[in-house]
Image 1 (cartoon, rainbow, N blue to C red):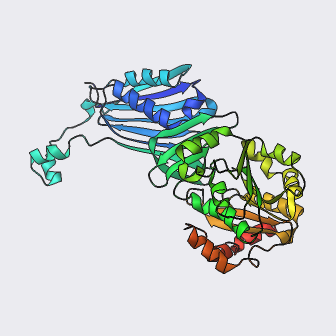
Image 2: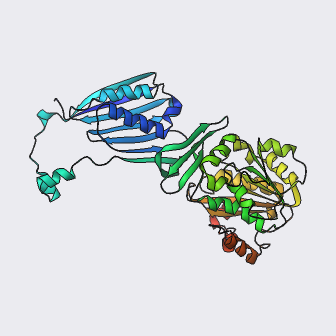
Image 3: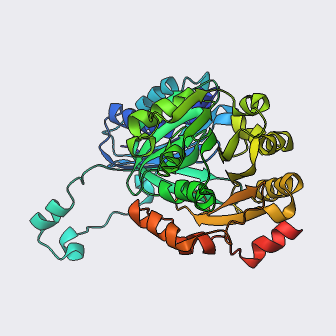
Length: 431
């Protein structure tokens, strides 16, 4: 052998952009490439960077295969490093070129560790392991293969990474967005849309209990409810805990979200077949334009971030229709983004709502959701009839309700405290 290791620096151009943005698929392709080359796989670690790009490494007994992708350029940079002569890295090269559907690839091989420039010394493993040579041999045996695959939700300054089990539970690209469900180690199954976290089984209660019970427990006369979005079903589940509700209309644009949630997120979607629910697959913006004046007591805007099909849910024209459709004492609650992660959207939406409902009838409140970037998330309570979200609260009834339904996040004290905003948020909204 002419060197201790072979190092191939690879560039793949004209690849399939969707493949280069798909963590489980890239991990599979990298492991397949390593296996085909004759390598012994030790572990794999892969991250996705929202909205584009994957980084990862497959550690092999003979060294490693590493990658970073730029889907927006249809480009991938790959390192193939093997030690000894039992593995052929060029087999991995050809395997990955085909897997990524690259139009062309370029590579340069470097020999690492020239024997004539090195001096070999004798090392007794037992000197370092405190064992006999036989015992050292046992400890140096190939470890069990482990996977570490991560989903990352990020912007240019902040990122949240969540480890999952590697293989997607569900994936489908609808006419509107990419819908996926991952099985995470810490938070159970997690729904994502266009690589952004929507909810997880373990911490979704913080979001759904706060967007629903805050407006409903200060408005016990609510009978007719409209939900825009909310295809996972969590908001409907919480609404139907209130026995006075006569009807719920949910307008969700994407049938794929509903179908995926029904199949894989039963703890959220359990009420999507309830007889009081009218589930409509349609554009919520268009639905509101056609809705009759003063027809709903409560409107819940359970939307994703202001991109793609949800972008229109952050416009003044949309919220003017919301105001028109609310009954005289009606209330709206909406997720209004993170004051840290989506500061511009948070401030712009709050000011928009103040212009429509009046500054005195728009109240910001907070919840802490671990699987959302920064953990801090905001909601907007807007009232058409001046029902105050804290002063109108019956704490005894709220306490009884939370205990009766074994709520996991909401209680009367949390309800009141949620409207106590940190100084930096107050300053932000006054700017």
